Length: 356
Ligand SMILES: *Cc1c(COP(=O)(O)O)cnc(C)c1O
Image 1 (spheres, rainbow, N blue to C red):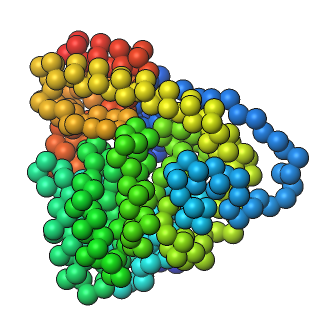
Image 2 (image 1 turned 135 degrees about the vertical axis):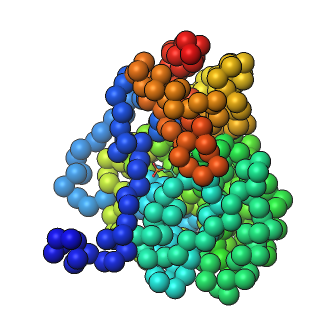
């Protein structure tokens, strides 16, 4: 080990960084590996104030998001992507080397990575066979932890399995864990199924937190902009920990435009197109011999199990289509996650599958 390696914290020495779609990379012209939107809008930039530090929480942007989700401005915090929100939650509520988070795998990888980098433990309650959360087991784990499990991360719709949470069971869990743990619902994909949003639970439960992002349905993954929704008391604690200027001026300007009436309309039109493409793709997948099962989903992605996913993955790669391989993850043997793209990209996907 080099001197610098030995200087690093023990947890950092042992750490394997998150392999994001972009870090894994891949060659091709059809990118269906990161749940990004297939199109990009135009934005205006006013550069007259770039010599000044931005606002801590740019008021117009916060107002626009609060109006969009029907909450008060003091119930909204903006962060450098939802990923930063995950990390701030852990740093705000979990004592390093003492406390733990709880996750329900298979799920989004950043909860565990953020906990590890903070020296915070990771407890797991696996999803049930149909990939629903085992609410009873989560409740029991939190109560049995004697205050050590501080944050529970649930994902709705869950990445990569695509399924939603059960609102009544979640509400019961929130009541049972009140004063003991925060329950976080990661709504990164909620714009694709807005009828399922859990924002109404915020006013009733102080221990409930929702994370959101502009990276998926808003087609703004590049600007790194996310939001945390919770009661004022939670937002105030997180505001103590977050960096002094978490969101850059240009990002705030772009976010405001994306959240304008016109921006929201563009987003909703995109969602309608992608949801339709998802239905067409799911149906076509079910008819293919190489497909074993297609998991029901309400996000802009579909998880499919193939007879031989390595063969399928290679066929995609040979045709310049980059997918996300989950075959090596526990319980996701032979599974590939396909981002819903535009109709040309979906046609290319099916052409490759049909050639097998
Ligand atoms: C993409 C994704 C995020 C990350 O959002 P950013 O705002 O880009 O950091 C968070 N959670 C889930 C479940 C995601 O799929």
